[in-house]
Image (tube, rainbow, N blue to C red; front, top):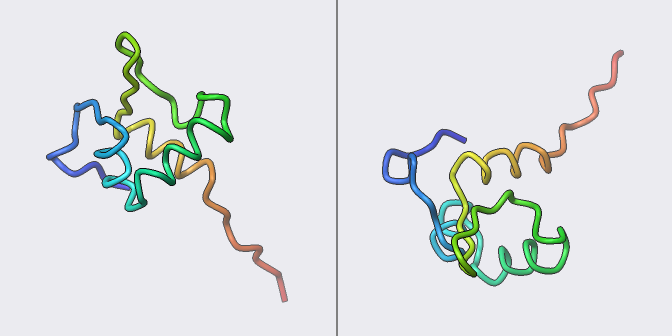
Length: 73
């Protein structure tokens, strides 16, 4: 993903991060709070609040993108 200028260098809460990813906030909450031990996407914590950087979201997407198998003929 290319980081849009409106997101570059900014911390995003769950709502903004889900908008950035193009998914619903509930989906990101489920991914973060129930399936990854709160380690993916890599969070930035300030007090009890959780934020994400565009870079950590991009890394998360790249890590979980499946590449098609290419069969040689």
